[in-house]
Image 1 (tube, helix red, strand yellow):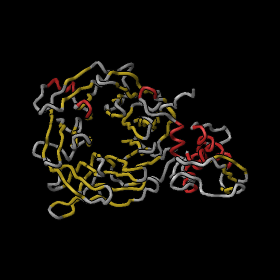
Image 2: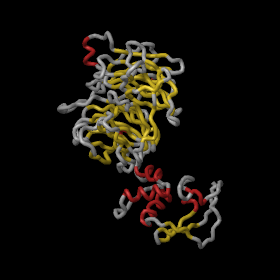
Image 3: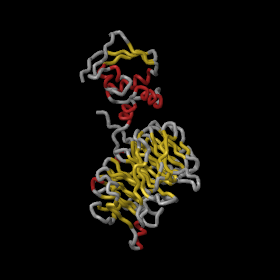
Image 4: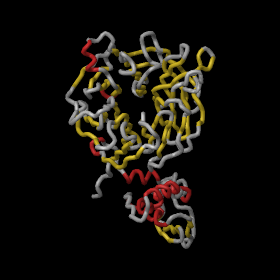
Length: 442
């Protein structure tokens, strides 16, 4: 960059600050200071005695200016963190603050940073991490949204429609799937503003040129701006619907074949490498488990597994969750004892190779244990079991650490995103936030 070494003066709330163009350029083009530079990152011409007046908090400006100078965040005790975050938002420096506040996500180095008590009566049912470090939590027909500062936004109320799944398109937009109330025709999916809770538009299912009422279940999103949802209607519209994220228009529908249960799927996962969709319908919602890969280009099922016809002893190995691991061309499943199982996607018909080496059960079982769930992030596999989350690392999925706290009871759901792990407890209506500490200053 052809940055000049000019000195720049700011009058912030009556206090004078002086810095260099080099320091200010660290704020980036999208910050408040970006327009002060030309396309070649040269400071726009100004008189040496000129100063820019900004009617904001000077103490916060001092912290942010120091962050631009050395990349480190030091917040004095007299500066409230939430005030600093609001000031950082004004200057366009939130990403700088977030990057300095916690390090790159590593499951083996996570530390509990906060716990938030639920705002609604009853147990939470689902939690989803947002791309910017916030999250949303479903309680029955309500969804509570939190930004990365853990401040709650207006609640989204679906008026007695039970929420089935939630997904973030970006930090400003949330997709919610819900059950249809019998005779009401008000289920399906909607796109909501994460900041205001406003319904922006609904996603319709068309069958034989007619708009149908339906219940939407599990959600997934692809890199080319498609939304996938498990759909169950009153007529023949059972299967997986596909919509455009930008327009909200239905663009495809994969109808389920006899004997399979796509409309009742518990998990959907888009696989970028193979351009296929993992669809899993799992016990106990279904008597039998079904896992398949759908190719929408060829309109066919290219891989499948089911426990139909398995020996009676398979009850000990009922699949509770499944996740595809594209790097190893496999699907990982977990049972109620937290045994991990693996299926080879290179085999036409799947079979499970179970392993108990990852089992992590210590102490007394909780009175209301929760079914385990799986997640992948940064090459690590995560599995929740009762009141802890286990972390598995390496190609052999070796248990390397666990996350546990004594308050809140069993974990009913967890989610990873925005460099954070969120764990929702079932008994005390509380969720925890886990972060990786920033690297030590050398």
